[in-house]
Amino acid sequence: MKVLMGEVISLNRDDHWVHFPDGAICWDNEVIVDIGLRSEVVARYTDATIIDKSGCLILPGFIDCHLHFPQYEIMGSYGEELLGWLNKYTFPEEISFNQQDKAEKVARNLINNMLSNGTTCGVFFSSSSYKATQVLFKNLATLGLRGVVGKVAMDRFSPEELIVLPEDEYTQTKQLISEFHNKEGRLTYALTPRFAPTCTEALLEVTQKLRAEFPDLLLQTHYAENKAEIEWVQELFPQHKSYLEVYNHYDLLGDKTLLAHCIHVEDEDLKLLQKTKSKVVHCPTSNLFLGSGLFPYERFDEYSIDVGFGSDIGAGTKLSIWSNLLSAYEIQKMRGKSLSPKELFKLATLDSAKILGMQNKIGALEEGMQVDLQIIDPKKHKLLNDRFTRELSVEEKVFSLISLCDDRATDSVVVAGEFVCY
Ligand code: GUN
Ligand code: ZN
Image (tube, rainbow, N blue to C red):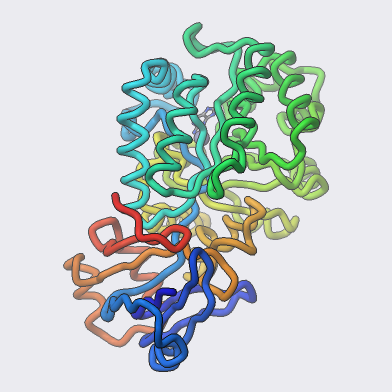
């Protein structure tokens, strides 16, 4: 058993702040068994190993519900909107992941960088390479980040080196599922058609078939990110009423479906998202960087559609979820709205856990949940430390972290009860 002492800040599943300025968390193997006042917790577990992080903040690890493994090294590529950016920077870079040594190097760097930013769970698009996807899974297992991974499926309007034909996609996907899905406690597979424009009908049918065979898998794709993208889908699929209806036609919607972006969405499609219980992933720094649009946050609330949170690197510009949350706040400000510190913090923790179906496992520091947490030392970050010299409420502290915090302030990170190296 271990007892970790410090200032605990979390949201519980009833939407209340859990705040113990002088607090402690006790865990046994991977699971939290107690959380509360330091003096009381310490007294209850006299045999436990004590880890004293006084002066530090203990928070749930972040969940990044959407990012691209093979785009780590093209973050900050200048000047394009989505379709130009894909052709000019993204596809050429993803081809280089057909080389195993490149995949190995980037997997290590990306995972370490995520951990050093306090992210303890990631939902990844790999490239279309079977081997690169194996490399990502293996590095996640070694380095200890919790992960959901999919080999991206694409078979048209992209360079030949990235195309995998539907029958090969079927075989390779099944192979990856049998090798990695739930084989190691923290890793699962997600079906990952890139987006409708780069998928033929035959590939969408293969995805439909795989989904029927493996109904417990998550499915991730992109949807309604950019106006030119939406017009293109209408040209490519004139028989379907809308972009979303294309996915619906192939039975790709449902409560295990994660749709990244969802910026330009009509009422009819909001109703369809609601009816199918499909999930939305908001990726604010990406939306700003590519000039895709301003996410209509409250519309999803109106229709009771669950929203989670993602960095979407390499179109996203920050791996730090704090920085992505600040962009989410600023986007709503530009729309004349305001997200509260609680809503923002919840987006990257409990809300994200919920869209992955993991709300009873991760996203909050509560008894019975997995020990996935980040420890922040304000003293390591000059500005944050200066900000924290005054008396702040828990909401003010969290919003200061959203505004100012980054990886400089990370002291250490725990996944499934183990301190990870990065
Ligand atoms: N739509 C299809 N592929 C991509 C991608 O790699 N990034 C983003 N942001 N949108 C996409
Ligand atoms: Zn994306």
